[in-house]
Image 1: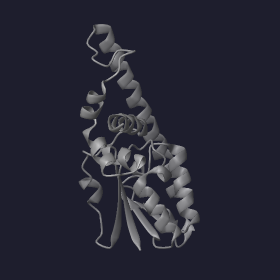
Image 2 (image 1 turned 180 degrees about the vertical axis):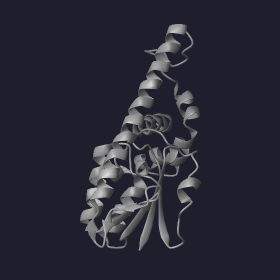
Image 3 (image 1 turned 90 degrees about the horizontal axis):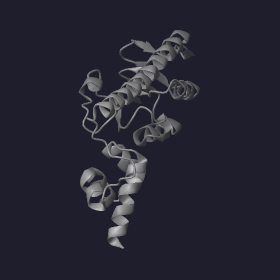
Image 4 (image 1 turned 120 degrees about the horizontal axis):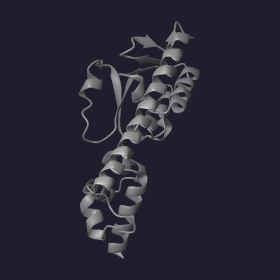
Length: 200
């Protein structure tokens, strides 16, 4: 059976581009989560790995290698895991597959390693630029971030994270809620504490 893995960083990003080459016989696994989250810790990726372990999947497609993750080490470990499981991984925008006639494709691994490194560097550069922008805004007195030592009131926390509140009230797990709401696990834990304190 064939599968397709899709990842967007937030709930609001559109996955249409990644669905462009989807085939009708593919099972879809869609995560709305940061590429920094290890592959094996993502809700839908975990379901995919379970299906692979159960022998239900033998071919996996992704639109580009950065959908697998933004950490070179994690991407390469995931590719190795798939290879050892006998899974052929196809990267659409490269037109390459990890296995050719059942044997590992060295060209695939080399190119994916390079691209994963570039993806990781892009993420680091983006974070660096964000910090530079915040520092420049602070110098100009234009930064509106929260001052050190201040905290949101319980009402402000709940108002700011309505999606998190909704999924927690639906009895979703912490990790599932974080994935669905596109926030960190720490944020979900903070919102849960506020909800629990209100019940108490």
